[in-house]
Image 1 (cartoon, rainbow, N blue to C red):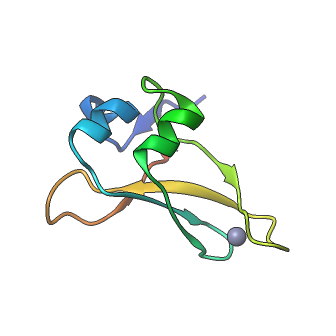
Image 2: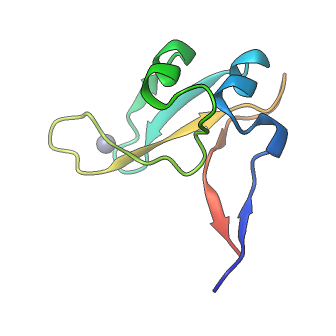
Length: 89
Ligand SMILES: [Zn+2]
């Protein structure tokens, strides 16, 4: 049994917190590399304001790809995009 360690800052977890902080966000398929543009309006419709994007895996929309995409965002200005995934330590 591992402990789940989230690499994403806890205060930026919810979609609302991310939107309010105006963090740039996109999604990318782990299999084919397809990059998807996403908007906070869309994310809120899909998951709700108080949900988070960490560990969300969605089926890739590309025809013939059976991969999944995950969300990427920046935690601040000038920082690189990071995948919103959980690591099991
Ligand atoms: Zn794909």
